[in-house]
Length: 294
Image (cartoon, helix red, strand yellow):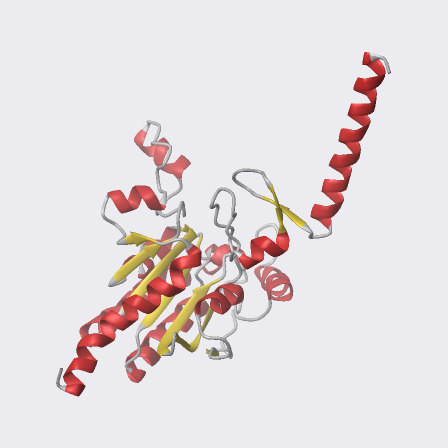
């Protein structure tokens, strides 16, 4: 075989391999890592809680998948399911807001951008609120604010710890000022919860930004983040334009905000359930000691 023929055969084989990889990715057999670009066997990725086993990149996950990862199997009971978003302003951009709501509900299921409920975590009762970035970017509208406020109040009434998993691009612009009001409403509810001695744990995932980060997501007694999660208020480009200078490469990452004291710890997703269980047990220990006289 001549050198030219060898190169031609090699090129053909490469094209065949590339087409096969594309088909397998399209069929869902393989998933390409967003960070290291390595092809990952989808079943292995799911088994590893959607964390790349090669580079540790944390893929974004749906709210219901997150709940299944965190709480005891079969223990979750959803609350506030009757709350549904409406269009108080008759808002239209590239499409009507009501159409966006219908499309997102059809694609992601009911629950808006926040799913709330009660469950047990390693046998310990908790109130839980998990944001869904895949529903309109996890934006906080009136329903998200109301569902969270009710969950805070329900946790207070039940004397349960509250765990919130945040993932959001910020306030929902289609609801205007009504959306911004949710920042104050949720923060006020958390102030009452804190005054009563409730334990509030926040888990910041990629991304947690805007009005969500500027309100309830930054008010936890304990604030945990996943590795490399984007955490901040305004976006990097906006801040660079305002500062008129380049920001560091790790700007607004979990690692950066940890160094600057905004969060308490970074916990990889495969260890998150165990860490939350430990923190809940530490919180319960003094109460148990008082009951038992220890």
